[in-house]
Amino acid sequence: MHRIVIIGSGFAGLAAAKGLKRADAEITILARTGHHLFQPLLYQVATGILSEGDIAPTTREILKRQKNARVLQALVEDIDVDKRIVTWRNHNEVRETPYDTLIVAAGAGQSYFGNDHYAVFAPGLKTIDDALELRARIFGSFEKAEIAEDPAEIERLLTFVVVGAGPTGVEMAGQIRELASHTLANEFRAIDPRAARVLLVDGADLPLPAFGERLGDVTRRELERLGVEVRTGALVIGLDHDTVTLRHQDGSSETIPSKCKVWAAGVQASELGRVLAERAGAELDRAGRVIVGPDLTLPDHPEIFVLGDMMAVPGVPGVAQGAIQSARFAAKTILARLGAGRAPAEFAYSDKGSMATIARFKAVVKIGRFRLTGFLAWAAWCFLHLLYIVGFKSQIGTLVHWFFSFASGARSQRTTTNQQLVARLALEHLGAHSSGRLVAGQDPTGSEGRPGDSREE
Image 1 (cartoon, rainbow, N blue to C red):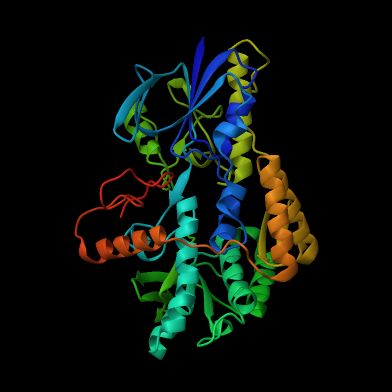
Image 2: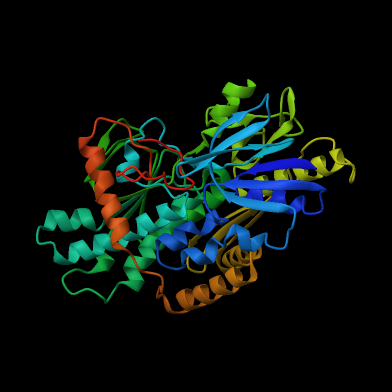
């Protein structure tokens, strides 16, 4: 029977598996985590609106009725394109899985543009672990400020800096501001959470630069009305435990005291892109994405598809729709090769538009020439995100949490654990004192790397 191996359980990997449910083939899904992550809502986990289970149903449960699919939790280490074998491990056990067709959809991690040591002080937002780590840092900053006595230390603890004004950065900054202004307003005695500063920093001239000038202006005004300080035209040139240093367009620099930073600028494709470049002679772009042909395969290797955030295709952004559409195309092509259906000529991306929330009841939507702002845009955002969350239980759970949070301003998912705090302290200690290299998310005692995160610091 034809053997299909899919690396990754994100939007592309899952959509490819579902698209092949009627294929006369054995499908093996190799993924670093046991869940399918709805990444666009990670910021709501980080700020206490949703639980991780609402946006990360288990992959096994999703595919339990698909009899031709097998799910294995695995860290892929190598791909032998000549022998057509994928080498992977689970903890210390190393295995090999042969394939006839390979789909590589391992996604992307955060890019720090060559400053990987920033990751210790400003986590990205790409995995569940990232979201829980940021939740611990955000709520922990308020808790520490409540017992601090030095005014300068209180200022550092209550200053939150979000780097990157794309959708994730805008949404994160807006939620931290609402959290401080509404949810936590009357819960402390020594501090007033409403006095917290939230800064959104980006080198572009406007927030959401991909949305155009009009929506960028609307986003800036709404954020500033909320109380977010928007610093555009500013690049981060220094970042440590206590400060962020910016360089403005006029050449001046500014140092901002801040304990809690969030990095939402830039992405870097999975390290498997580099493996394919070495093993199959593939070319990579600056973000580490694999340059593929019109049919999303590698030159001289038509049996290898590269999809989603790992593929470099002109005009296709790194968003969920790009991943899903590429996966459906690949599935149709594979089915045609197996004698079921007709192969599409080449991949053509259909832009379904872009949207981002600014705060409760405020969002922006761009669909072709159509622009929408305010409550209607926010309602459209809610509807579409519910539509794409996998699983009925996840949709109902998300809807209940949204109703509770948006109606009352409260947040029910505010629990943090000592494990997150201890891990943070260990990483900060190693980042400050170690001259060696540390795989991001790797336990300093030597356990396996954190699932879904491939960056190094």
